[in-house]
Length: 159
Ligand SMILES: [Zn+2]
Ligand SMILES: [Zn+2]
Image (cartoon, rainbow, N blue to C red; front, side):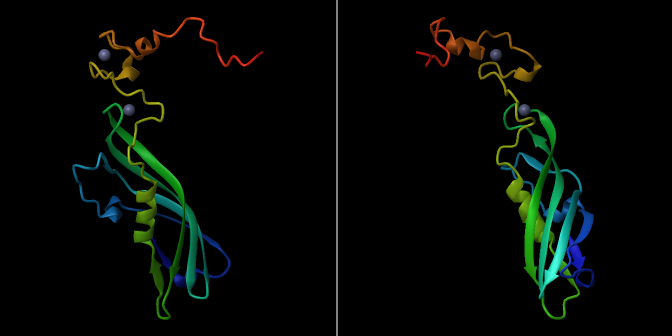
């Protein structure tokens, strides 16, 4: 994300662009369950006050990998807003905010990404993905509550 200082003034102006996945300088490690899978799209309003560039915008960053809950292959899009401020030097003609944008994206990346916020994970006994339907091993979660009295009052503070 490079902005030309000649394009910037105290009046905020709209910019947009794309950065290739290489912007992350991503190093695959066994600790990572997801990796960048495509270009980052961004749009922002940028202005400059006395040599300081202020940028407020939004990014969409695609990632691919494995759901931490159910283990399926997945693609997710991390979308978030960002605020960046950077100082420029007297002879600068542009400001490169790529590394700042990268930090914003990585901060927005969940530490345990899942395919869906409602992902039901897998059966702890047989490992079947519960989104595909109940497993046949008879250890479904409902049995955990089977010891509760049938007439257990719901919210019952009516008296
Ligand atoms: Zn999942
Ligand atoms: Zn099971």
